[in-house]
Structure formats: structure tokens, C-alpha cells
Length: 152
Image 1 (cartoon, rainbow, N blue to C red):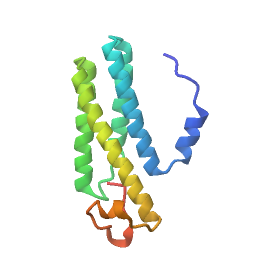
Image 2: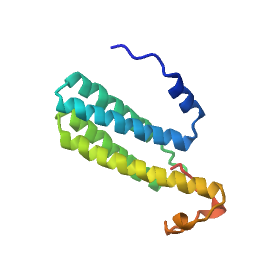
Image 3: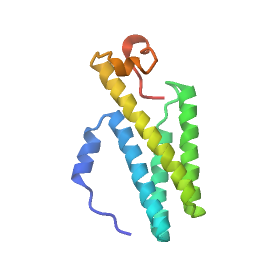
Image 4: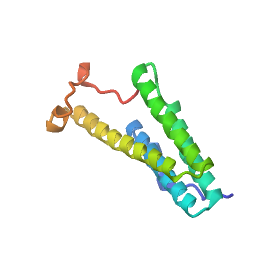
């Protein structure tokens, strides 16, 4: 199977992205490949099912490998459990040809993506020194020093 030539725009976007933006790109990629795998599953295109779900699984594994327990072990354990769930659901979707399994994974991926976007907005506001209603409504005080770590 041949792969398309590297997309210069995508390469530049990745190279110039912040760590927060890279994580968002990973969520977007996992969602995109899971959706493509779902479409292939419905179309009974088994080779495409394997390829798309494999790509989504690799992204999930990459996110799991990027967890840094030295920052917040409890949060990392929770995220590792979520990533493990997502990985198993994508495997089930491919092996058992289970549309519900991929739908379950997509539901969690979309929720995690939304949560990540809200966190990025919060961090951006904190970096800018803004303490607005959106931050106050979160019901959580800012961590000591006013910095919110995005890492586990």
C-alpha cells in the first residue's frame, strides 16, 4: 500500500504547534480514523476497516505513552484507563465487526476532545492573566502559582 506524499502544510502545523495543540491534533486524528473505520465497517471494506482502526489505535497508544506520571500519578492512571478502554473498543470494533464498539469509543473520544478544548481555553486565559466568568464557573481554584499544568 502506498502512502501519499508528505503534506507540507500538515508537517508545518505539527512542527509549529504547542504541546496542547498537538494533543488536540491527536484527538482529531483518532476521531477521524475511527469514523473512517466505522464507514468502512458499514461498507464491509475489511482491509480499510483494519487500516483505519489500526491508525486510530496507534494514536491512542501514542497518547498513553505520553502520560507523565511524575506530574500527577492519579490523573495519569485515570487517563491510562480511558486510553485502555478506547484501545479495546477499537480492537473489538475491528475484530468483532462491532459498530457499537466504535460508537462507544467515538463518544468517549469526542467528550475527551471537548474537555481538552475547555482546558486549553482555561490555560490560555490563565497565561494571559484573565480570571473571567468561565474560569470562576469551573468551581476550581487555580493551582498554586497560577499555573495549570496540562501534563499528567
